[in-house]
Image (cartoon, rainbow, N blue to C red):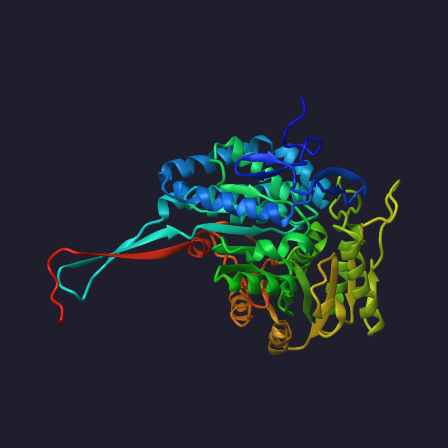
Amino acid sequence: MESPYGIDADWNRLYIDGEWREAASGATIDVADPSTRETVATVPAGTETDVDAAYEAAAEAQDEWAQTPPARRQEVVQEMLGLLDEHREQIIDLLAHEAGGTRGMGETSLQLASDQAAEAATLPRRMKGEHAASNVPGKENIVQRVPKGVVTVISPWNFPLNLSMRAVAPAIAAGNAVVLKPATNTPIVGGLLFARLFEAAGLPEGVLNVVTGRGSEIGDRVASHPESDVVAFTGSTAVGRRVAAAAGENLAVPAMELGGNNAHVVTDEADIDAAVDAAAFGSFVHQGQVCISINRHLVHEDVYDEYVAKLTDRAERLPVGSAHEETVVGPIIDESQRDEMLEYVDRTIDAGATLETGGETVELEGVDDSLVVAPTVLSGVTNDMPAACNEHFGPIAPVIPFSTVDEAVELANATAYGLSGSVHAGDVGAGKRIAERLETGMVHVNDQPINDEAHVPFGGTGASGVGGYNSEAFLDEITEQKWISLQHEPREFPF
């Protein structure tokens, strides 16, 4: 008997108001495996009619769910967490088939998603209010924390499991209802899987609704729906601006984690081997398709040649191939992403940079038009070259020289983005002093930028987004304070 969580299960249904149903139009979307380029599943192409039904169900179910005792809400999330672990192998397989995730990426996604769910399970008991003194005699002020209502979650294709989990699980735990619109490339592991998990965990009907479909057809309706109170979006800055504007029309709270142009700063006092170890992971894990990956390597001129040589050697030795085999660098999600990043590489070379290694696709046996891109290192790069000034979102490492720490800081901050970053300066104190000067929401000393822990705030500045995720930061987005005053004795009025 096939598992309801496997890629071969029947995923061709939307989940609305506790029912699995076809899209109103009956149309479907094929899900392609980035490694094999073959269709591996079919999902519904939802319509605006389906979107409206999902929000109607969420709005109807939310009040009763909000009144559910915190212990019960906690229990549902914990049960879902248990199912996540129980079906870990099927879920890792889903990530390989849909997102092109290697085994390492799949295990990391599971760990992060589990961490997010475990943290979310604590939220129902942490929604505490307070008393505030009053200037009016005999008045008692009570401040309650209550759920916002209906939370829209629009999740991305790069890490669909954990980046959906970090919004869906806390929103539900805090007493909200959710409408989840997953990315078109990863509609199962970023969307329909959550419906299966929460349904099996005993979540009441209507509290979670999942609508798959093309963003070009239903994205605007999802982002601008009048029943939505919070819009949690993870994706590119260009799309995020549109989503935030649409949410703003209804005064919905935007929680936007957008693009990044993260710098990896390496000074002449750094342990170069340690800096390169971090750099290889920070640039090439999941093919560089990570919003917090290293987009630029800023390296002191005195250690520049050594750094480039060692990073090039590491890049050339990384296993590359299908996500269904033992490999480190798998396929890019689709041809449009692949072609864009390779164009950045070509234009950067044309602008005067040197290609040290990579810069081309790697052919896979039996696969036409491979999506695998070889780990790429570019030297002689300047901050304004295409692979450096754009978020390339690929296994590309542009290495930029600097002569002073002040110059490094200036280069790192010369971007509209401000998401993450990393510093290697030998001494931790020296690294911290540089980190404090970087205009980003997150910086990691003697490490690389890809870090996420569910109990630590996660968010960026500038064009990297608004609002925050994780623990109290996201709890503030999905709840609001309500003031109730009690007048215990007659109050005197002036007339």
